[in-house]
Image (tube, rainbow, N blue to C red; front, side):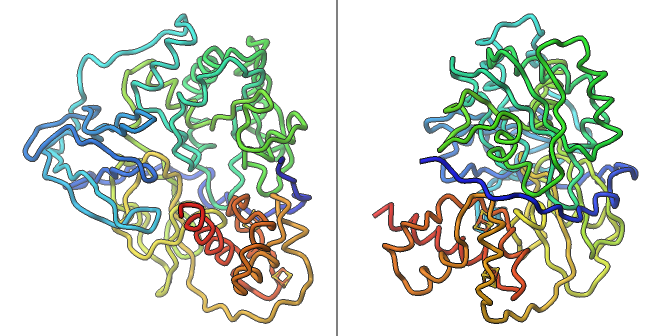
Length: 428
Ligand code: SF4
Ligand code: SF4
């Protein structure tokens, strides 16, 4: 089975100008950081105990199921213990609490890597540094590269969600790291070519990237349409090479990596430091001073919001991620994780749902080629056979069906519920 791809003709007003050019702020050092010890449902082994002293870059834990992923301290200080806090997936998860000594002392003797390294050494380095996808998915990067079937490496610099500019700012600030990371990924993938996908509306950035890679024959900069969700790897891959796949891009000879992930790799190769700091876009219509902010992993959202002047409206909706694909969180105690790229603050507005008009717009605009309205109806009717045929599990939760619905129906939320019900059913 291959995913269908909808028309994808919708250009969204991104409001990226709110943070695209203004100053990048540093979040004031916090007394404590809370490193999320959660990667899906994987078991995490904690390697430190109460009162242990750690530095920035000390390994403190590891995911140890079928994927090994080390987790590192983001500040220097003392381990306080483990605390349950609300995670971005809207469930309480363990967080390792570190009390900062305010010095940000870095771990010494961290291994680096030169571009002369071969494919296996680069993949091993990705694993050692705990590199995960920074585009929101958080999947271990090295796992994708353990293949001999890659012909095309795609670097995703599209960043299609409204408000978010963190990737663009990272590229703007760290071009040499980006180039090093992309070259290393290309080598690791053993692909014949690399395509850097970027929105055609990025008029300033495109020539800069063309210049950056002009001495690299195998790497090309490829502008794509500014439509949503072009940043989804299926749509980007289809736009660039015209192929569709079922589960993974490697089925059609591709690996897709996010631009910031490439930058993080490029930086780790130079400094040896894993991801301990994140650039996060704090934006929306209910934050006083939208900015991109830099903060240690494990910083509570409340500190990011305070750095940006606080809320500008009395009632707000807080979203981990962008307004289309992010998840609404009820508490600002949620902390920045390795894959966090945005906190969106919107004015809370009571929405009155009207009856479905059967207009079919949600069907016309679904990038996965689904029938959102029919999935919702089948779920409400508990018609499991019909639900199975309608493939709710293929939904990428892009939010387009809710966005487009003239009756203001929370269609995406209905699909999420249907997915959860189907997942539970599959477990039985
Ligand atoms: S959220 Fe809606 S539009 Fe997006 S993939 Fe899922 S069903 Fe389709
Ligand atoms: S877009 Fe909204 S009103 Fe139109 S068919 Fe879908 S759910 Fe119904």
